[in-house]
Amino acid sequence: MLILSKATPEILPLTSIRGVAALWVVFGHLIGQILRALDIFQPSSWLLNLAHGNQFAVDIFFILSGYIMMVTYGTYVDPHKFYLNRFARVFPLHFVVLGAAIAGFYLLNTIGIHPIQPTSYSLGNLVFYFTLTFTWVGLLPAWNPPAWSLSVEVFAYLFFPVVQLGAKVLNRHVVLFFVFLLGAAHMTTLAVMGFADTGIGALLRGVLGFCAGALLRDALAKHPMRFASIVGVAIIAICAVFNLYEYAIFPIFLLITGLGENKAGVLIRAMSSRLMVWLGTISYSIYLIHWPLLFAMDKILYRANVLQSRAGMAVFCVCYVVAVLVVSHLSYRFIETPARVALRRAIP
Image 1 (cartoon, rainbow, N blue to C red):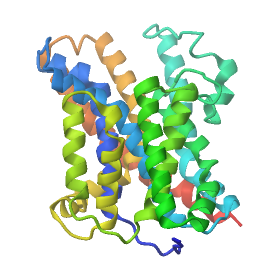
Image 2 (tube, rainbow, N blue to C red):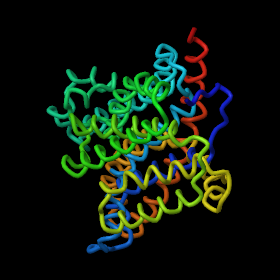
Image 3 (cartoon, rainbow, N blue to C red):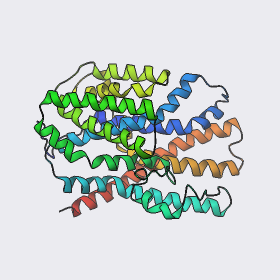
């Protein structure tokens, strides 16, 4: 049985993994501009496969989130405090970015740069987007499309107290068996339903990954697996080359377990560097902010005839990545952190 206190220290390599996954998502969304900057019209299949991995990176988030929740809360069940803490972590920045995205869309629409599609951006559906329940009712990602995974994760949070109770009462070997079942179900969902971003397919991705990650921590806590992270990275790399990401769920388990339980090694040291930890720290802002920023910059600069040349596109790509990192750092410092601290102080 795993019971952890509030004083549980941060696991730096796992923080860094969030940054890697967030940048993978950014890379996938920026691949078109990158190829135009490099003047590549027929890119190698492995490069496109790597870019397609931005969908798979979200599954890393789901599994890692469950693992970290168990690290943070253990098997001490307190749903009231858990849900309030998650609200303080997820919603403040979401409200700000969604509000900015809506204002930006209407501004671009007003000046004739980007007409709004009423079917996808209906004001009548905004309540589902603000409350992060739009995937629950099968609405397509809109306004800020990456927020679909937040909607799914909020749904997965509903199951966390049940997972905690299971981890508390079940034998460690039984818990590990459930991890295997959940991982197999997750893999099957991806193979059969694809990388769905709304509806039942998306919800299954989130719930199966989140619950498997949480139970994985409980089953293998304090059981170092020396080569697990290296083996996990190697298999994920092979899956990336051949675009077989649906089979990379168990390698994620190996990667996260290795980084979470081992205390030494080349990969541990690399993922504990200040740069990598910083990227992981601001990863939530990177993930939420990068799409509206890319959309706005691309539309405005293209209208200004700045992006037609190869050189102009190359400068755009560099400036965009820098802008994402700078804005995300400022967002973390002046929006995420103050809002989270203020709301958590208000929690009784």
